[in-house]
Length: 203
Length: 230
Image 1 (cartoon, chains in turn purple, green):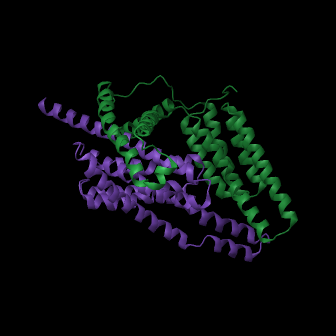
Image 2 (spheres, chains in turn purple, yellow):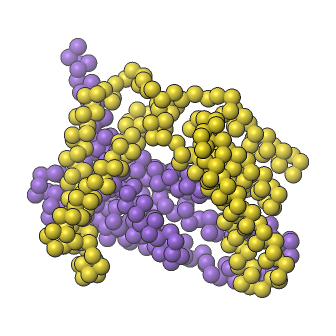
Image 3 (cartoon, each protein chain N blue to C red):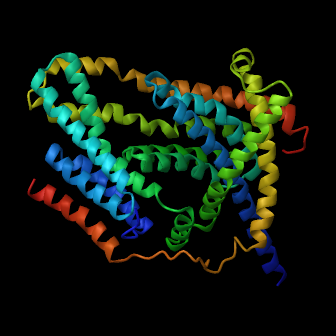
């Protein structure tokens, strides 16, 4: 009987942590939606979207991991925007990329038992790549279109010109810039935590 | 317009998946017209006639533009314009299936997650996300107005001169509130048996009906036809 009570209490604590996680995921999601709707219509800003989100969501992510310290929330937080983009009309690649980034981030954070700043930081750098799938169609759709239209008499010159407008290195630059912004975001949140949350006994 | 047929969430999600597959399975205006027509029918039956008409008109305009422009010539800018229009047009069926998913009520979505036997903790987190959105907006408003009073409001001037400080003033109260609210919400939800192991009862009936079956089978038949007949 005593043991049973113990288990129930553990279960309750776990549920409580998932509720906490839900709240931070909601804030992360709001940041994602705000920057998404600001950046989407403007071509250059559109490519900067994951970079901006990575910086501003860092404190939310770090606080979420610090307050929950269980496997699950990181994966849910990473996959949810992917699912949202999929339902908004992106192709399936968006969710595959989100799942890969989120699960990798979860594993990395788990290695440090969710308590180490080092592994949590690396985890966030990987986590921030979860939106990349939304941009891959620029390259994938393009090739599919060229393939289906070249035999219908489209000039190869045109294909080369469009390829020039969006060279492959843009993708690599985006990954690097997102990781850099994520790192800066983590440093910023570390400062915030010292200045505010540790004093207020939140952590 | 009234909802003529009520489609299950799972049907809508399946449709979204099928539209993703179908989009890559073929191309050409007649093929796309069939997909758009089917999605428009689904939207109209779900009582979203206006959305259905909007997408259909958009598709017709894009198809017409494609045909007309290709008659003009194949200069670089015309080709580029055509390229963008065709890519956007091919996404239309997915946009339509997506707007069908978005027409779902939150209660129905949560009930469906329990029905699908997803992990309990996943459902708890996702339900809280939905529940917390309106609260974030309220908190956000309150923080903005109190910042205004202290003279550190979110204005262009403050954002340019102290961008990081302004973000800090916004995020810190938001996160502190989140920690506090999460404790209260957790106590309230656990009191009401959120993590109870017995099946959750819901007044929202989640059931697959004849309409769902038809809506699921038709795209599959379409895919098979496309793959075999071409």
